[in-house]
Length: 107
Length: 119
Image (tube, rainbow over all chains, first blue to last red; front, side):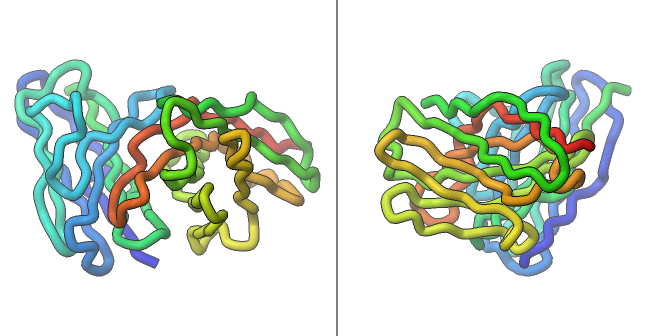
């Protein structure tokens, strides 16, 4: 089973900041890596798939990169609506495992 | 695209339960349907997925043998069933849709079904 590890588990940032979070897979997942956003009490939504492809309707301030075992999600010009928890997920195997999440909080 | 799940459930340990997810607005049999668990205050865990066209089912190792995923394609509905609930099954369960092409993500989510198991 592929384990996904996200870091940091939480971070504090201000509106307008650039934030970066990472996701590491226990073995190569090629570019089969997805990112989801979840706000408190809400359903998760897909942000990025295949490591770097923005889901339709997602603002361009979200950028995904990486391949193999190491991936990054970057948010530039952080907006109030972006304070949420972000999860990575591998879709290389059908276990479709998630990372533990990175919570982005207001500084 | 809509995935509409059944309502919240409160059960006792040892009881059985089946929750449902009905898909609409797309060709139901051409996508995987899956389930994701979220324990209150915790992260997301993939339970498993099923192909409505042939009932091919894949479980995550942590859930294999503990739940059963099934589908009735005649009514565009997938199910998640427990034969004997435990308190540790208390969680929100999301229904998800996944395109059949290899490597793609969950692109649509249901509203969630809260399952509470308590004596």
